[in-house]
Structures are given as C-alpha cells and as structure tokens.
Amino acid sequence: MSFPPQWDDDRDGGVRVVRNRVALLQMPVTIDKSINIRTAREYVLRGRNHGAEMCVLPEVHLFDVSVPGGIHFMESETLTMGDLGATYFDVLSSARNDEDVEVGGGEEDHVGGGLGRIGVGICYDIRFPEYALLLTQVHECRVLIYPGAFNLTTGPAHWELLQRARAVDGQCFVLTASPARMPPPPPPHEDMKYPHYSAWGHSSVVSPWGDVIATCDEGPAVVIADLDMNLVSQMRAAIPTMMQKRTPLHVACDHDVPAPLVQALLSAWPEGAERIGTSQMNPLHITCSSPNASVDVVRTLLAGCQDPSMITGTKDGDGDTPLHAACRIAAPNNVLETLVQANPTPITWKDYEGLNPLTRLWVRYFVLVGENIIANIKQPILAWEKSLLLLQVMVENKGREGQNQAASFRAVHAASSVDCPRCLTRIAMVISPQQLLMRDELNRLPIHIAAAAPVYCVHDLRGEGFIEEAYIDDDHQQRAARSRMKEPQSKYEEPSIIDILLSGEPAAARERDPNGQLPLHLVIMRGKAWEDGVKALAEAFPYALTTPDNKTNLYLFMLAASVGRSRGDCTSRARSSSYVS
Image (cartoon, rainbow, N blue to C red; front, top):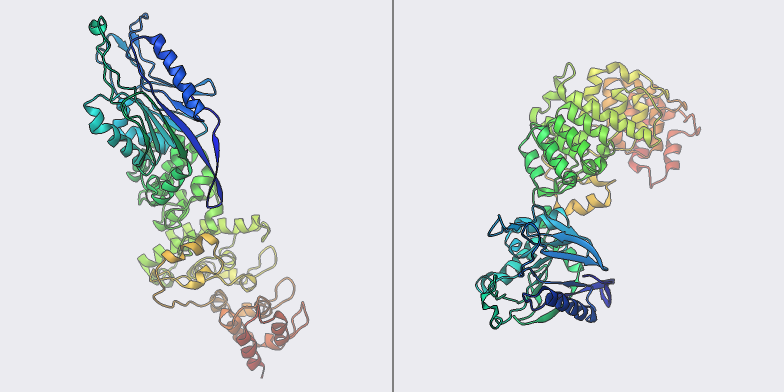
C-alpha cells in the first residue's frame, strides 16, 4: 500500500531531498484467512502511523482455498491510494503438483508510484539476476520488492546475500518482506493438510551500494526505512554499468543479422533502438560501424524506433553519430543516404577529434590510398560519390539556415563554402574544372564564395594527430572532451582554399562579385591572414592592390585598417603595402 511522500528539510548540494519512507510488515501468518486479513490491516495501519509512504506485505499463501478448479495463487498486490496498482505471480518457480494447482506468471511486472518505477518479484525470483536486470534496465525500476518466505535452511545462507546482490546488480533499493516465524500450532492442528512452515524472517531494506539499512529478527515486526532516491541516480552515474551492457538488439546488430530478426526484436521492445550499450553505442551505431552495414537493417531500425532523430543524433564514446560511424567504414551510399534523409542535422556536427562526417570519410580514404587518390584521379570514384552526397546535404543545411538561396548544386562551389577536407576541393576541380569560372545563381564564382567564407581548420587526414585550431568553434561538449584526446604530434599544413582555387584558375583573382568587389578586397574585409589567401590573391592580381574597393571606395591599406586589429591581420596589411611600394 502507498501513501503521499514525506519531505525532508535536508539538502544535498543545494537540492532539496525527498526521503520516501517505507514499511516492511513482517506479520504472523496463520492457517485462518480471516485472521490473516485482520492482522494485515492492523500492520498496514502501524506502518501508516510511522509515516510510511508504502507498506510491503509478506508472501502469504499457506492456506487452502476451496474454489472450482483447485488452488489459485494470488501471490501479491501493489496498492496505490487504495487502488489495485498491479497483480503479480511468481514467474520463475513452479508448483509441485501442476495438475492440482493453477500458477500465474510468464512475464515481468512493475508499477509506478511516488518512488518512481517499482519492480515486483516473489521469493524464488530473487535468485535470478536476469529478471532483476530486466526490471531495472528495460523498465528503469529504481526499487525492487521481493515478498518472500525463505526457510530455516536457505534463509541464513542466501536471504541477505541475494538481496545485496540484486541491489548492487540493479543499482537500486531492494525491499524484502517475510512472514514472521511463529511456533507450531497446538493440537489438533498437527494433522492439518499443510504442515507448519517456519519462515526465516529478517525482512530487510538494502541500498544501491549493497548496505542493509534496515532489518529485524525473526519475530513480528514493522521495519521502517527512509529511501533517498538520489542515491540511485548517484550510483548509476558513478558506476554506469547500465550504459556498458548490450541488449539482444545490440548483439543482433553486431552479428549482422537479417532485417526480419531486427524487426522481430523491435516489435517486442521498440525502446531497445534507443538503448545505449558498450562504448555508449546504440544499435544503429553498431550497424553503421559494421563493414557489412545493411541498408535494410538501418531502415528497419529507423522505422521501428520511437524517435528517429534521437537515435541518429546520439553520440557514442568517440563523439560519433551513426553518420560518423558509417563514414568511418565508408558504408554504402544507400546507407549514408538513408541516414541523412532521416536526420540531416548531424552532417555538420564534429566528433571529439573535431571532424565532421565528410572529413571523417576522407580520413579513411586518405589512410588507405594516400596522396595517389588526389594526384591520379581521372574520373569519379567511390569516395567521390559518397562525398557528393554528404556535400550536397551540407549545402542544403546552410540553405535552411538562411545562408544560401535554393540553387543548383555545383561541387566546386559547395566545397568552397563548407567545412570539408581541402583535398575534396582539389578533386572537384579536377573533375569539373569549368566550374572555376562558372557563376552560380547569385552571380558568384567559387573564389568569391571562398573569400567570404570562414577559415575552416586544417585536418591531418593521415591520422597522425590533429591540431588545436580544430576547436576554434567547438561546442561545450567537445571542449569538455579535449582532456581525453591525444596531444598533437606534428604540425600539418595545407594550402588555403583560395590558394587551391587559384592554382586551377589564376584568372579568377580578377573577377568581381555581384557587388563589384574583387576577391582580394573580400578577404581583407573578412579579416583573413596573409597565408589564408591574401598573398595568393595579391600575387595573382597585383592590380587589386592599387584599386579602390567598389563598395567602400577604400584602397586596400585603408580597407585593412578599417577592419581593425580584432579582425584583421597586421602582417597582411604590412605585406600587402610592400607590394604597392
């Protein structure tokens, strides 16, 4: 039975603490049902008088009930405010004479209450850790209740041991209520159908740490305990075993099972698709990390889960979303396409090494093939096809953010505008060199787009380290993860995007944008450094140094000064002035 919770004035770290008081009713049990009911009512009132929010009755069924069909076991009831909250039968034990006894069971049970979700077992069920883990991990129960009646043989050997084991396994409170041990009844009851049963007693409350915080001996008693439910959260956060285990769905995805089997598991438990396991990976992470990644399994997981955006946006222990994981192993195009269609947002997210999915894809190819993948490319390759898909989604995301109008997709223009590996820009130029002097719907060349874009960090695709500049625009989660990362091993440099574009078409340096501005004026207004394209543009078109900006009518040195020290680079201004003199 349950009653309203009791508030405590104690505070834990400035947070008000609620202590839920429970009462275990170790009541005497007789062969007379009416006496048992009367005794139970008295003990419930005693528990209530002690301020208990919930009263737990013991296992009581040692009396014969003459009903059609034989004996029926109604092992326990959980009552909430006078209503029937749940009815539960012993799941794991079996009756001695199946032909005479009808036994319930076959599925786990739990009920909600003031203490959160409460799992219910009966006596013998406490011996099975799998059942307890099902209640705590799948149903997220924070309290397990086991009304039981261990005897004088199993009681002293196993009663407390099993309670503490289930509490530590489930990182939860465990409550056990036993009948009181009573002397045998006097004659003439010696010849009754059911012989006298001596229960062990010792009803107890065990904390998530495995401590027995309240108990009694074998006689009649009411055990009172205050449960601080914050201890459950603290225990599960300090020792996150629930985040480090795998469900059957995790195992199935790890073994590349067919989609129908995944569908069957999801039908039984849709929440399993969102469950985090080893390395903080959900089943979609595992599928996308497999060299045999199946688009059918990916589609099944997305269709069968409760929230596709949640499972596609979850980061694992490396900061990878499922899209990152798929790019790590260069998953098939249809897998990548399915993921970005389900949730395009993670396309720009960075993992804990500062890499977005597109860059992660090219780390793999660069490690496998090296510079030859860039130097010897003559036609589209598999890596390029995957890159085009991701690149297009990145550009579409920028459009949704209001940074671009709807426009035809052009690879060189796209690679010049988003955070992608610089080798990708070089490959796009080899495949589509005509785009270097091709204007988009906004009348811009790739050089104009690159000049106005932010300076994205350089990533060492060789996998030999990564640079601190990768974290200039990081979010707080990535900053918090820096301490887990290895130190840079070497300084890795690449030409800027502007240098790369000018190497393919130097004449682009003299082309004006829709506002009549030259690329050199654009990079100065963006405050870019000498090595970020200023030098390359000055060398490609020196005339721009002595040409006033069409928008501001300022000469280059004046334009650089107007930008200010906070945005501009002093060396850029000084070096550009030397070109004029």
